Image (tube, rainbow, N blue to C red):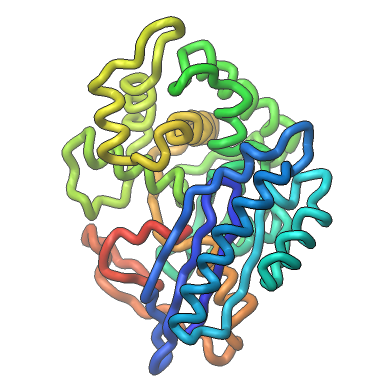
Length: 334
């Protein structure tokens, strides 16, 4: 068995996989909400953030020891890689936990997102989007191959910390977030001028948006597609006007459907809607696979041992490729 641990900006997640007879399956997924991006002040990762990372990694290591798993790999993304004191913070975490951590670049993260997604869904032509806690990865692909990969320094958590004064963003704050996303896109002319009908959605923010979409529009739990107009409707339904109390019914929905993302899901969805509106996208195809699966395929499994994608019926009736699955909504993927 193999274990992959992703020290993300919002959550720390661990996936445990089993490779048997050439077939890869996900046997366990565990996550802890840490919010590392919130511990970055003036560019510095605070000691409290280092402490939280150490606590969770020590807990995960105990689980792996109890299961007898020695083949595990740990990588970190935006919160740690973007901190001014990144090297010192990572060194301290490794010294205190005894766990080796690889800090991956934004472009590498985007590439691994694509590799993981390509083992779960058909990726022929379109745009992949992964909205994390402190970065958003974009991959333009055509003919099943990467044409461009970009990492933007914005995510659901650092956007919340920077722009939102109440629990939920107001209309004015939504406009500020939208303009910030567009300003970043303008820095890359080729990317800014693209149009992509389909967005492949990866990561916890977009999976949370899918849950809200299915709940609010009374769609089957297995539905993996979010129509673009629905995202706009959800944002307007759940946003909060400045100076007003948050409606009880709004809080009830968020606490019932996405309790661990009450603060961050709306900022993340605003980023997502800004992107799909700009690129004239019609819908988001959500996949459970993502960066951890991509890391496993790219760096852990030998090329000749990696399972070949097999056609299988998708949950919503479309043809998906074989990907690590538990048969239920797995919170620790992508």
